[in-house]
Image (cartoon, rainbow, N blue to C red; front, side, top):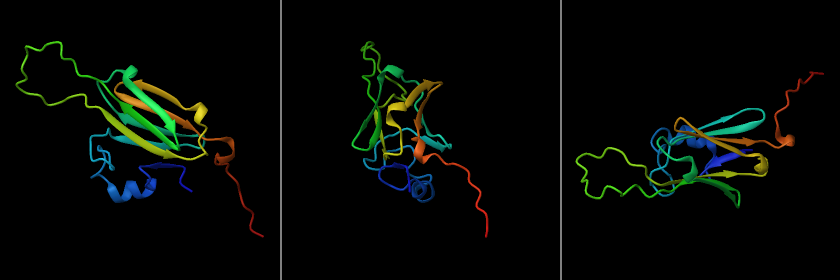
Length: 139
């Protein structure tokens, strides 16, 4: 059973079938989305979104109807209206990235931290789904 899915696609299929073409953009809308790393431990899933130069107060993270959605919205500074750009190679675009989660995630325990341009999310697993090593004896 897949616990964590991205855009309603099986995580394994996304890794092997879409690599690397769709990473860095939202598959459903074809708009910019930050690159993501997802790791699993016995106790939790770890999601890292690459989003340098952002303000942590402008991230919005919510869970609704089985989806964990991370979005970023800002109005780029327009204080210097008399400056006309000559070269503009980057901007802090708004984005929205959603991940399908099921009831195996302890949603009340989700933590988020933004440091060095990486938004890190910890999604703890509920006790009953944690992987417990077990040795099977052959009879």
